[in-house]
Structures are given as structure tokens and as C-alpha cells.
Image 1 (spheres, rainbow, N blue to C red):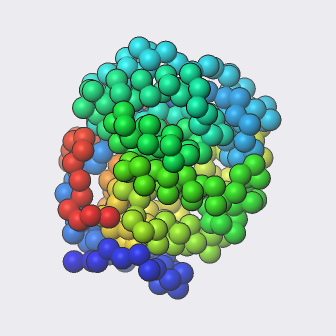
Image 2 (image 1 turned 90 degrees about the vertical axis):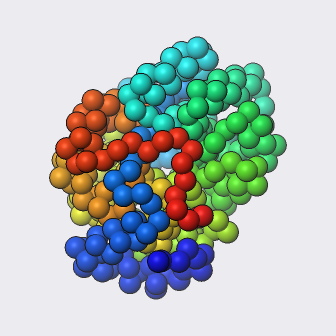
Length: 325
């Protein structure tokens, strides 16, 4: 059985990443079966509870206020509307419900108090609740933990070396500090990145190395393919070749064997056969529903048809991998 460890060198990861693709997929599939239940894929739903108007300058994001992307700014949703959305997601097969707010950081105000109420309400539905709200202090993380938050998403996005080419309004260290605050509060960590933003293979390897060498691996590692949005600095980039996404998923599976590897943004462009290869390479979680925050995504009924054809089954909430991350 492959061993979970936290001292990966860039050279070690490079050897994996550069393995011939079919061999890499087979190796990742073997590792996956050692640490996870075969054929089990978690369905997650992601809701934008506060949309647009963000002060950050993330080059990929249509919610940044400084870009003209036709995203309509919407205030924080009402708790009852969020609960209704969670009920629809659960009925569609989702066991994890993720709430995203277009904030640079969490502020201790009435809006945060309302988010705490949302977390408590959806947690009572026996769903895994995840939030992505921007930077988080230690005390704010504790408040979220106290109301039952299961996971917090805060992606590294890319390598530390490439980061300043994508975002200038915060530092890489800020992201790592938020991850530390989340972990110390006892909340599970969801952190991955986006490929297709002009980064090199070294950058992809560097991002995985940073995640894999954390004191504890993220329980969840989203691998996103850039969805170019007109009006953003990366809006004219070509879509990522499919085989690069599979290679990244397989490498993430091998270096973080017990983590959930999430096939995230960019899935709408994939055929069922291409998604099947991603599952063979170790992806064991997807986002379902018609949107990922503001970008299109396959609908629940389409995914259920795919699950039936491929013989996949939805993963229950709060069930864990076979070995601790």
C-alpha cells in the first residue's frame, strides 16, 4: 500500500508527473483503490451566496469589481433561500453543500453572523457544509467551527513563483495563513488550484508540492481547469487540453493518496469518456448543479445518467477515506 508522507521533493513529483500518460493513470488508479472505496464519488453543490463586487484582482475571476464581465452584483442571500438551495442539492444527490461569498476577507459584522446561521442550518440537514469566504482569522475560523462547519475552501491557485502573475492584492503567505487557521480550528481543509493560466509544469509541480508537504494533507484537493471569461485578464486564453487535466489529477492522487481529488471547474467541456478517465486517474468528487458560483456546470440529472452508465455511486456525507491524510 502506498504510504502517506509529507516530504516530497520537486524531483520526486516531477518523475510522477512526467510518467507516460496511460502508465500514470494506471498507477494513480492503483493508489486510489488502496485508499478509497472503488466506484464511489462524492457529489457536491456550490452556491454563490454573495455575488460580485470583490475588491481582489484575481486574473481569472469574473466577480472582481474592476473587470467588466456582466456579472450582476448581488447582496448576501437570505438564510431561508440558502436552506432551500441546500434541500434541492440534497434531493439531487449532493452530500456536500458549499457556500461561496465574493469577499477578500471575512469581516466581523452582521453579514458574517448571517453566514454562521446558514452554516448551522445546513449542517442540521446532515450535509457536509463547506464555505469559501476569502481570508480568515483564527478567531473567525473558531466561530465557524463552533457552528459545525465541516470544511473550508481556500485554493492556492498556482505555485508561489507564478502567484504574483495572477493576483497582486494578497500574498501567497496570506493563503497559507488562512489554511493554518482553518486546520488549527479543527475544520477540514479544501485547497487546490487552477491550471491553464499560463503556468509552467514547474508551477503545477510546485503547487502540488506545497499542498503535499503541509503538516496534514488537505482532505479535499480541487483541480480546476481555467474557464476563460471575457473581460478578465485571462479571458482570451485557450481552453486547456484534456490530457493535461488528467495528468494533474493523477499526480495529485499519487502524492496525496488519501485526499479527495475534486474534478472541478472546466468539467462542462468534458465528454463522458473524458470524465471516466479522470475517475480512473483518481478523481472521486465532482460539483453538480447548473453553476459553479458564476460559471456553467453540468446539471444533476446529467450527472446521474453518467453515474448510472459508469456504475458509480454517490458518496455519503462524513464518510472518510481508508487512511488518514
